[in-house]
Length: 152
Image (cartoon, rainbow, N blue to C red):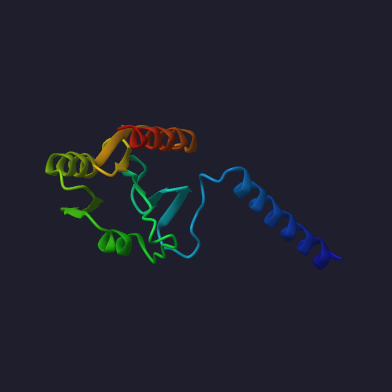
């Protein structure tokens, strides 16, 4: 009886997890990726390094290339290493565009342990959003990015 009860409890937890994922599609954690949290918002993807402190959380939001719909990553470091437009500043790995000012501004801010930063990548560069990293604000940032990218 105890075994059956335990099995039913496990099934209920799994069902709740699936329901939560279905209700909140903007947030999903990639299983098996050490230190990486993944957010999927359609064409915009975010990878969050969980190994850093809360004041230096690094979210990189980028537009997923159409040619690579199934992106497989093993670690955050590998993602940064293999990503296009990567930029390394001291011990901080960043994904940047070709504008040096934007690169330096973001990396220095990240290394100093300032406020959490969200970078939205458009085709012509990065847009910075200063915010606490909540799902609601991330959702709003994605909406802003889509509307900005759509504008001429």
